[in-house]
Image (cartoon, rainbow, N blue to C red; front, top):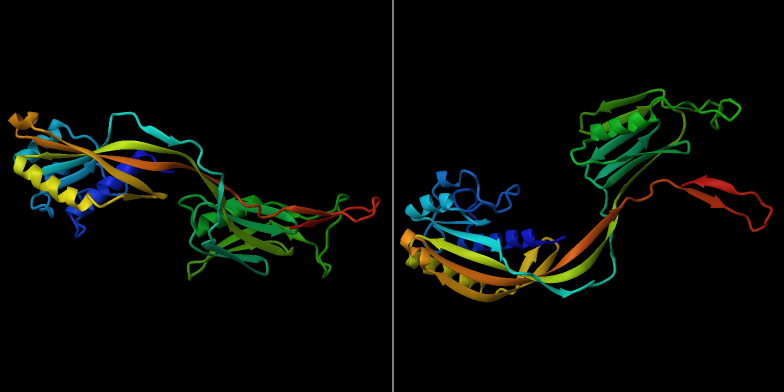
Length: 327
């Protein structure tokens, strides 16, 4: 779901790409590291940024700078452009927008195949995936977690199955397969990494094995639509530098109406520009450019699929007995 932080990140990325169209990245120009999300790096003052397309060095980031951050750069002729959510109240545009819409489950990126009493896992594990085994009607499922590998998935399944023992009837008699051999499960669960990167999981069983791998599906709903203001503030060492930077950025953004967010395109509209020359005695010239951004707050929910279930068949006659099939 999108919130004000997503809007700030998108605005900072937009201004950064305008000022550095060649894609200069990092602390020397602007910080778009995934972990930082366009925040000022702690060691920002240690590197001199390259000249921007506006003709002077500029740092672009989310947040509000402090004097300790600004003063060294202003003395060195380095300008800043900060992106910060306005202090005014947001406005609710509408209430509940629509009903839940289905998000189809993506195809799995991990695969499980059966060869005799062995299961071979391959592919690339991804979260929101279930890897399941069905051994003689008993299901075992491993939910893939972030950081899981084929080896850890195999270990998780093995830990569930190992020690199950022989399959017997209620009276203790052994259950035989079609060849008359007693069916056993889980006395051993051997994990073998193979040279091609796959992992083989071998079970001490003569029972048939079924594998199923499925991913989570979900729903998404636009719960509300709001309008909030965001300030793009230029902090410059001279009025000439401030005017040059702001004029350049304003020309590039003047025709822009849509701001790409992770789950939507937000409507963006310029609402005002304000100069603040009061701090000029401290060699600081400032300009605030305000944009109203209208975007949806979306609610997304994911649900696991059912790998194995029970289907009960009932005959038409009322006195007929039911039969059960494992799916």
